[in-house]
Structures are given as structure tokens and as C-alpha cells.
Length: 295
Image (cartoon, rainbow, N blue to C red; front, side, top):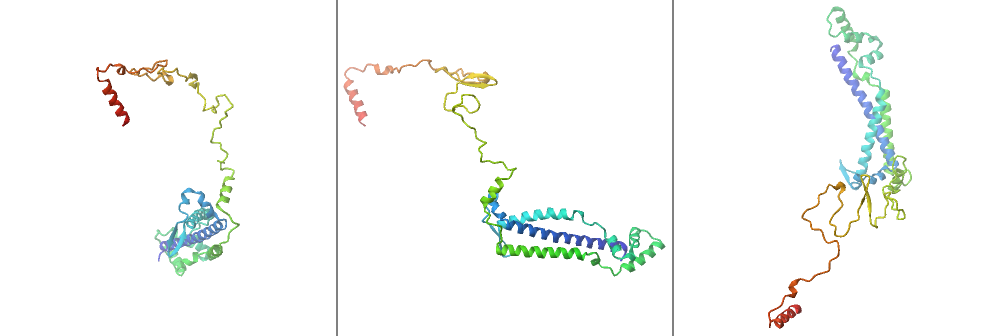
């Protein structure tokens, strides 16, 4: 064993131990978040989310256990919150390297281990002698010396306590009050940053008594005048004029269109009815049409 390999092994073990601390804390916080959500009946708020409403009756079989969709959602939310909080808690963790931790625990190696590692690529009598003395001192040192028993004990206790709490809460279905979906809806509607959609602000009020053009005109009466680009346009059309409203006079009139008469024309019978029939056939023709009318 040389100094380089010794330090690399201890650095890898130290990182593994620190990841273990974080994992245990993550499990503890996740369990506590999930327990809190169960106690507060957060699952009763899921029907308010349309994408979840159709899946609330769904369950998943995992290792012979049936897990409800609501439980999966609560666990996912708890995991996300736990991850964020774990990163915040461990943001200022001690980043001391393996060499300094070993020197702290073993004063006889102070400065010597560090110096030997910094000069690992140097080959001379002094450095080689230092390496030999340091290697003899660290020959019996295992990676366990870098494990913080205090931190590990507290982390394990947190997992055990939180697991016990969540087991009791779920087994006895302990909840604060009888919170329903309507209670969650009322709570959300009363939040200051949630707009109230029940006041009807999205609808226009029609004031039938008002004659002003304020967007609330009488829709049942005739619309005589409108305003287009700041100009008043008369919409009343004389009968038979054949001309419609065209904004800005951009629409060309169809030259093939024949406008109707501006006055009412009485019905005029076709001249066919006044044609004379051949003499002697009036009775036969009259009899023919009478028989046709009977059918």
C-alpha cells in the first residue's frame, strides 16, 4: 500500500458515509411529511384536481400489497419536499477531507500524513523515509475511523421514531377532525391570492333602463347607429335598396345583383291562365282537372 491508494480509499469511504447520513435524514423527513399529510387529510383535496379525480379509485399492486393512487401521490409529494429540505439541511455540512479527519483523530500523524501525500510523486531519501514511517502508522487504520457514530446514531433514531409514528397513524387512521373535500375547497377559495370566481365578474350586466352606449344596450331593440373608427354609421336600410353595410366602403357591389323594387308590388297572375282553349274541349279539360283534384 502506498500513500496515494490509502487516501483514495479513505476519501471514497468518507463520501459513502456522508451519503448514508443524507439518505437516513431523507427517509426521516419523508416519513414525517407523509404522516402530517395523513393527519391533515390532504388526500381529501385530491378530487379538486381534475387530472387526479378520474384516478382516485385506482390502486397498484407492489410486492403483493395494494397501494391506493392517493397514497402514491402523497408519497411523491412528501419525497419532493423531503428532498428539498434535506438539501437545505446538509447545505453547510462539514466538507473536511479524509486526511484532515485522520490527523484530527490521530495527533501523531498531524502534518506528517499531509506532507507525505503532497510529496507522493517526489523520490528522495527524506520523502521516502517519511513515507515509510507514515505507512507503518496507518497500516492498521480502517475506513471505519471516518464514520461518525454520533451522526449515524441520531439518523437511525430519527428513522425508527418516524417509522413508528407513521405506522401508528395509518393503522389507527388518526386524523385531525373530519376534514372533507368541501372543507379543502372552502379553504382554498378563502386564500388571499386565489381569485374568487363566484362573484360573476366575467359577465356583463345589461341595464335595460339605460339608453347610453356603455356596452349594456338593449339587445332586443333595433340598432340604428353604431360607431366605426370614430364615425357614426346608420344601419337602417330602406326596403329594396339592395345595399348592405360595408366598413370603410371596401366591399364592391355585385354587378349581377338586381335590386328589388322600393315599393310593394301586387301579385300578378301568369298570362297562361288567360289563354283560350280550343272550342268544344272546355268540358273535357274541366272534367280532367276535377278527377286530378280528387286524387
